[in-house]
Length: 239
Image (cartoon, rainbow, N blue to C red; front, top):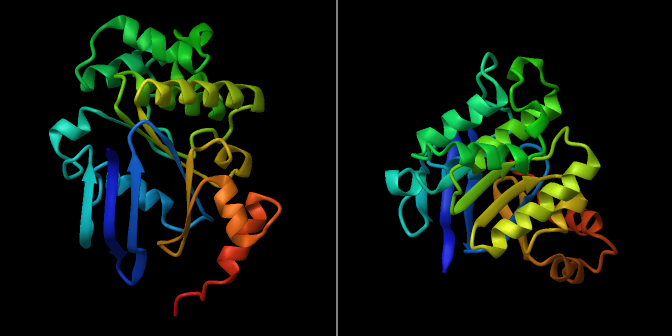
């Protein structure tokens, strides 16, 4: 079953064509990585899947419904690039609030999410006292507290130290093993290699899709970065 299906999606902002006929399918229970440079269309795609944007044309299906439907939103977790938190509330209060918005009022749900991101010792700290990396972790906790079926992560580990990044990815893998579908946008190559499937995007178009090994084999590159550069170099810039 596909958790996400995008078919010929076009999204423009004025004269900018952010998504240009984008089509891809993401199977349920997998970790799908969207890899691309800044401005490639990654965030626009994630916001469209989250129901925050509407496509100009094409069809989008999330959990077998159009994105933005209440039933879909209740099962979706979204972590934006820039944390959207209440600075005067504590870590735990922020997470509990967002969990309650999704109908989860059990304090244990917030406790579990805070523990997931390694902030149990700062649970009672106001968000305004936290570093940028810690705020990223609180934002992630808010996205997972209601145990979503699909998790959308836009550059989730920016500012997170390498040791914690490894731990988080191990936990993402556990979530996928339990049936969650995780979509991660990143430009960090070692993170991309942890995904089951990668979609390489440039100028709102899908350059290539497959496992890391398949994408490397397609270009003959020694590593993923070389493969991306080779594929990007073969595409003409838009007029």
